Image (tube, rainbow, N blue to C red; front, side, top):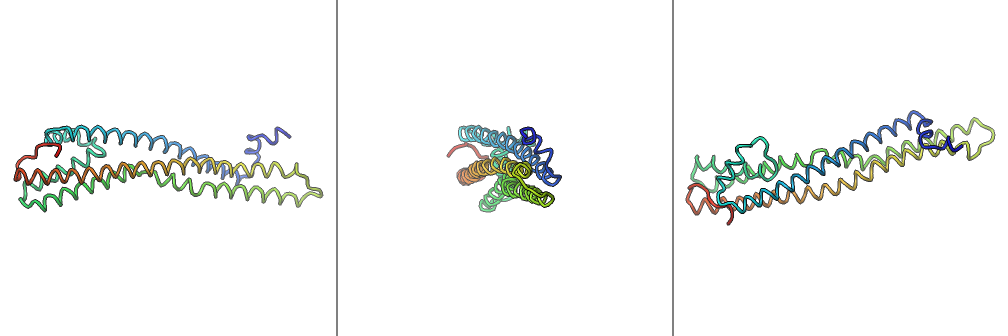
Length: 234
């Protein structure tokens, strides 16, 4: 009886439908954990790079020098660096074409908004999968449980005397599907909420920086009348 009630025996003895449900949930759980570890590493790196760039930018005496350094590795830029590069690049391009400060600032701000939008797509990648796993895994597990219990009670119609020992294994194997569903759903929900909060904070930092940088560009453009922008802090 103990061998029949072991976890491995219950899983192997489950009906094909219940086994399929278990496989789907295990795969979803594995993928969720892979995304959790990857997303956590990605966000830690993004916060670190943002901290380093802000410290360098606001402590720098030459915005043009910062831009030149970043331009040398333009293909590997990310986060706040990309926002800065997009805004300053568009600022310089428009400054060479027009003396209208309003047009220049609108173009620079628009370029930074586009950069922030692209960074949003990057940091939010795979996040909907965690939300999906957290939402539907319990229901998939419940489906496996209902199916397994239904099969157990259906089998009782073929016997004259039903006992608890006859239905217990079937019910136990069915409940395993619900357990696996919860095991997949709970971490997905926890880390989805955590990552969503962290991403909102990170994107707010990008938005705030773009607004602050736009102000710096506007003040310097007015102050120097279109000459080369100097000074990282105002």
